[in-house]
Every structure is written in C-alpha cells, then in structure tokens.
Length: 485
Image 1 (spheres, helix red, strand yellow):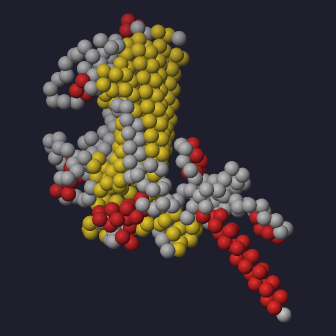
Image 2: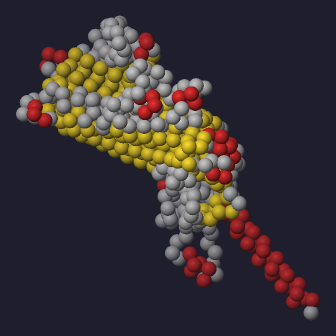
Image 3: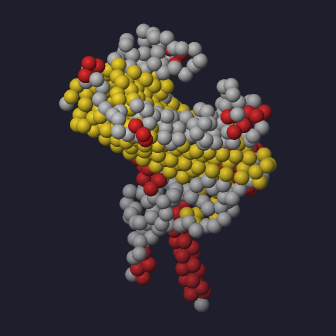
C-alpha cells in the first residue's frame, strides 16, 4: 500500500515545482520579451502606486506586485488544457522607455518606499527633509527598482535637498501630496541656488498629480536682486520623464533641465503671479533630445526658455500666459560663446504676454542659434508677437554696439496668426556685424487688438533679409531686403 502514497507524494512534488516555476517567471527581469502577445493595457502608468489602495496590484512587505493583463480568451486556455505563455501588458511609458533605450521592468518585483515609514509627518509644519533623504537612499539603493511614494492629502515641508544618483536600478518618485519649500531664508545658506535637485539620476520618472510649492513670496518681496533658489533642478539625468504635476510659486525658475539627455516633460501646470520676478516656467540648458508637451504655463517671466548647449528641443501644445512668452536665449552674455540648434515650437497659444516667440542675444557674444521653427501659433493680445533681438540688454547701464554677436540663421515662422497689443507686431533687430540670415515667413497674419484693431500692424526690420511665402502681414519693408517666394 506504500505505492499509492508514493505516487501522491510525487504528484504533489511535481505540482509544487510547477507552481514555483510559474511564479518565478513573473519576477524574472531577464526573460525574452520578443514573443509576448500585445493586449489592451489595464492602465497607462508605469510604476504607479496608490498610497491607500492596491487597485493596480498588491503589496507584501514593502514590495509591490503589479497585476498582469490577460486577453478575454485567457481562461479558455486553461479550459482547453493549453498553456500558451505569459501575457505582458505594454504601457505607454514602456513604449517610451524602449524608444530611449531603457529596459522594461514591469515584469520585475520592485520596492515601494513610503516617505511616512521613514519618519515624514506631512503636517505642513514639521521638517521632513531628513525623512525624505532616508527614503531616497532606500529607494535608490534597491537593485530591483523602486517607487518612492509621497502620500496624497499631505503637505511635506522641505529644506534644500539633493536626490543623488546613480541609483542601482530604475526609480520613480510619485508625488501624490504636496511638497512645500521652507519659508525660512536661513535654511538656504548652504545652497543658494537649489531647493529640490535630482543630480545624476538616470531612468527616472517623476509624476503623480501632486503639487510642488516653491513658497516664492519670501523672495519676490525683495526690491534688489538677490540669489534665489531654483525650485526643481534636473542635472545630468538621462532617460527622464516628468509628467502630471502642478508646480507653483517658485523662488526663481520653476523647473530647470541642465545637461540632460532624452527627456519628456508633459501634462504640467506651472503657475506664479504675473509680477513675480524671474520665475521662468521651464528652463532648458545644455540639454539634448527633449520634448515638452501639453503644458499650461503662466508666470512672471518666460514660459519656456531655451539657452546655451541645447539641441533638438521640441515644445508643442503649450498654453502660455501671463509671462514673457517663449524664448530662445538670452545667449552670449558677458562675451560668452553660445550654441542652440534644432528647436521646434508648435501648436502654442500665447495670451497677454509681454513677448510672443523671441530669440534674444547679447552684443559681444559669439556662436550660433540655428535651425529654428515656430509653427501653428495663436497670439491673443500679445506685445511683440514675433521678435529677434540681437541687442538684448538686461542691465541698468546701456549695452554698447560691439563687433561680435551670436549668429542667428535658418529660422522659419509658419502659420502664425492673432492679435498684437503693440503697434509693432514683428521686430527683427539684428546685428550690423552679424546680420540675421535665412529668415522665412510663411502664412503669418497679425493684426492690432483692442481700440487699434482697425489700424494695420507694423514690422520693423534691420540687418535682415526676409523671404515671404504665402500671405504675410505685416511685412518687413522692401528696402530692408524683403524677398517674395
């Protein structure tokens, strides 16, 4: 009678081995994903962890296990006794990762790091900086990837803090609640330029629908210029995604991308009072291959500013106002060398801004701003809707004419229309020593707004030859080199 018992034991052992093999396949990050079946995703967020619920997965000892997505015929596979392999969900962010060279990690078990478990209070008065530092250290050191969660309906008070890389694996910061800057100026004595900085962190996603509050009013009230922190800085980051956030009232610039490669910033709302000084919305410097999209920006300075060292930057579906418009520059300050190329701004609406789309360079600088496209843009009561200014000067004493200048060339303005709040709708103030080259206007119609609507808008152009394509109004005077195509 020992034989049936042995047979039962063998069957149980075989079943146990099969279960272990099946579960192991879920946590392996090395499996070949080329033969996986594509299905409709259950959700569109990568590494999304809700703090209170587990609708997209389940937790266990600080680990988050994502649910798998299966086709409708999945159960029939078992009914027919056929096992056709695991089905993996393909989310939007995974497709993004594949484009920028990342390795998908949705099949991995990754670590959940809740800042509250590391001592954060989130009561708006307690200093949570140390707790965030501990939580980041735990997340960044995880070899299997991590999600650092800032719970919703909480307000976390933070002093200047650096989130340093490199991390051991991919990492997500999910901001569901509010991060608020300390309003004590003495807290910024050790770092007068940064509040939140992500330094050298690759394969980073920052999202969540929460709010980042720079508490800038304690800085704006000073009449004289003083050093002020940038609210959020991403420095030397590769394969970066920043999305679904509200950023408000920065000390100075709201969000700065410096020396980054392969960046997507989208679904961002950036706000500050119209008279808040130097509060650029999104600032881009020395950054390559970046897309900014679906952003609503209204501040006291440039909605978007793109400066030296930036290449292949695209901004699309942008709402701007109030503010100083969308700018390339300033470039070449203090006789510096500056290069910007491959910039596209399209499908933007600017309302009530002090400038529209602008290229601004200092006298005495060198370098080049080239291969620039402004397309499909609506202007509503905008001063200086289209402007190139090679005599930009942001100082008390006047700036003198100099022999050198940053060259501006190959610029196309296409399908731009709307109303100008200034009598001069198009202003090309180009350098005598380095005139603007290859400037094209295609289907550009700008009229005056308000009580001046019956009058014609003007164009003032110097040291530039403009080629007009289609209907263009107003136009540079013929004696300045207008060329019709």
